[in-house]
Figure 1 (cartoon, rainbow, N blue to C red):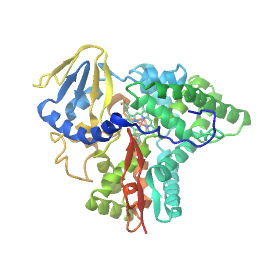
Figure 2 (tube, helix red, strand yellow; figure 1 turned 180 degrees about the vertical axis):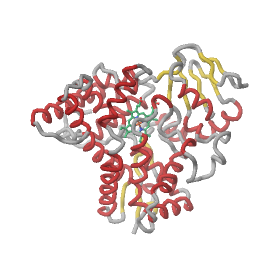
Figure 3 (cartoon, protein in one colour; figure 1 turned 90 degrees about the vertical axis):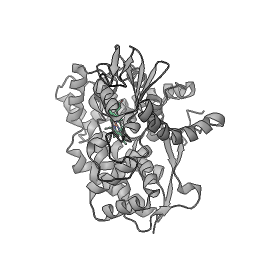
Figure 4 (cartoon, rainbow, N blue to C red; figure 1 turned 45 degrees about the vertical axis):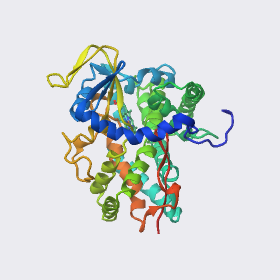
Length: 415
Ligand code: HEM
């Protein structure tokens, strides 16, 4: 691996080979069926010191009980940030609450309609128009829209001669996907994390010394700092911005192409989504996209670690004792298929209610970007859905391929 070159790299690491490749291709296909069986016969199942929770009620209970089931993210957050905490890895402390509130003063809900919606709509339309009927959805459309729009909103440009998409996606993989702690990935992280820290700091320094005021997230942080708000130290601002870059933009290129693949598999749903896009009915369009995502969500489960001995689903026949230190896997993908809480979960229904989805987590650590995601993800597909005769490109390229947890490639054609 040559980390000194400035040649563009693939945001995704090389594919697995041999048995691992075979397992990674087949396991995801088997998981939904496995969850269905478990929900019926063994809704909370123990293997070793891990507990897999599969029913909607129990998944929500685990997420809501953040005192007993803590997020496991802090160790890797600190490896990435150089020793600093970020809300993602914190317990429900005053610092968590104050940091989250401070972040809301610079990442504002008003920005969604005022600047993010127009920016995503314009860039997605431009890409679809320029592609002239032949488009690769993962990289050419969704990754580009996400990184350009959010990079400029956060105020963090590409590092000179480097590719923020590669850095962020690698660090995201390390933070959230790498439960087996792959030493090769750690090696890359030990190079990339300090580079990202230095990059964000140098952007911050340059902005400050230029005296230039820009109304983006970085600009607002620097303004608060200059006004004497003691929370907005350089360390705090750098950690917040790098955590946003790592935690946010790598995800739309996973879930949005997955949603399109699910629509392409269901001709009626595709027509419905196209009609909603053409009618400019963004609420219904969002219904199609988030329903499609339910059939292939971000991942199967989110982990938590038990801080003390507890019981999940107490008072029911499935009540399960969990010892301190155990890992609890809250299978939100399974929860969204639980027939006890969702009517006809196997059928595609673009008019489901909000509570039927757990795409962006739940409880204390629910995604900070939830509202942004709800507004922006459907708009990334909208210009494409408005094109006549949208169809898969011929051959294997026209079917979504994945590399591990990441969507890799999906080519489409349109007139
Ligand atoms: C497709 C897009 C996205 C998906 C599917 C997604 C998903 C999630 C999920 C499932 C969690 C909960 C993690 C847990 O409970 O362990 C989360 C947390 C978080 N997300 Fe997102 N996210 C997305 C985009 C974004 C964006 C664009 C941002 C940046 C603004 C962002 C910032 C965060 C932060 C800061 C947290 C931690 C919140 C906390 O701990 O209170 N996410 N996200």
